[in-house]
Amino acid sequence: MFNRRELLLLRAMYRLDTVTAAAASVNMTQPAASALLRDMETRLGFALFSRENRRLHLTSQGRALIPEVLNALAGIEAVDRLAVDIRQGALARLDVGAVAIAASSLLPPALAGVRRAHPAVAVTVRAGTALEIIEMAVDHRIDLGIIIGSPPDIARVSSLRLAPLGLHAVMPQDHPWAKRANLTLDEVAEAGPIVLAPALPAGRATRQALEARGVPYRPIIEAAQSSAACALAAQGLGVAIVESLGAHYAERQGLVTRQLLALEDPVLAVVWSRDRAMSAPAQVLQEGLENEVQTWLARAQARRIRIKARPENAWRCRHR
Image 1: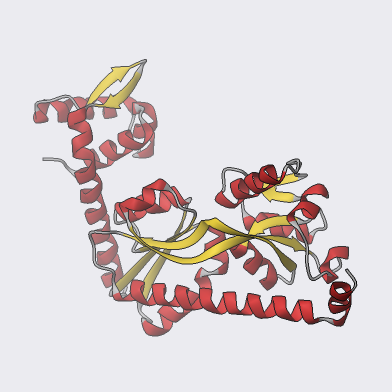
Image 2: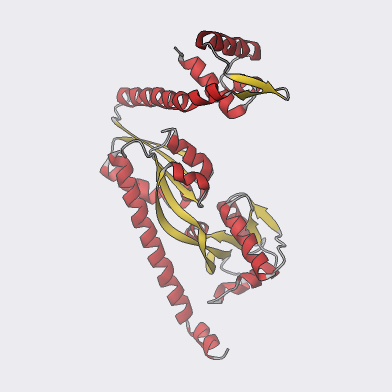
């Protein structure tokens, strides 16, 4: 009953709420989109949208159609991708979603393992927030997603917790604190840190931890990504407070990190669709991510032990 153009318009209306924005997103004019919506309602025999405060909202009948509209489009797009892959000689495909810091720190070595096991696999990496990645998994737009946090929507997908996270200080090697074995959250906060924006799970955890200690929240810079916070710290603009993945990324950039606080939430997790079997490349990727996390955690622990065992740090511990 619906063609692809109509399905695309319905999905756009569901996400954007206005005919003008939805039409633009599917390369249609507003009058053409309005006419197409009216035509669909005539053929269906019921209203898809109601107008409230000059905005269109899905009716209960229209909302009932949306899950199948999303599934239909996901199936069509999957067929299109598979056809392209077959034409180009790649018979397997892996679509991955990842929060930005996971895409730049944890994902690359795990994907290298996938390519060794499946040399012909075609890989697409999509960036997004935890909620966006969960939505991608629900809609079958990704085979596996890497998220930070414990959003309520995680119940809509299958998930596996990879590791708890913590807050870490990041600084250049020539910073006065770089030789210290231990550093506290209070000390970094009082010096005026670079922090992650409170909209991010680790940024929110930083603010909550400081408020719980009665320490004023007075960052000198708020960054939207851990990699950006690390880059700012590398330029000597202040000590950054990032989550564990950000610290992992920082160490690979030659920066110094110190753990400040262990957290119960947010966590690092992978997610995937509940109603579709995981492909062989996705299984290899999940195993690679688990192995990479365990290796990273073991190295971090060994590094902390080495730092505390340095003669100057041992002397400090004995004379406190």
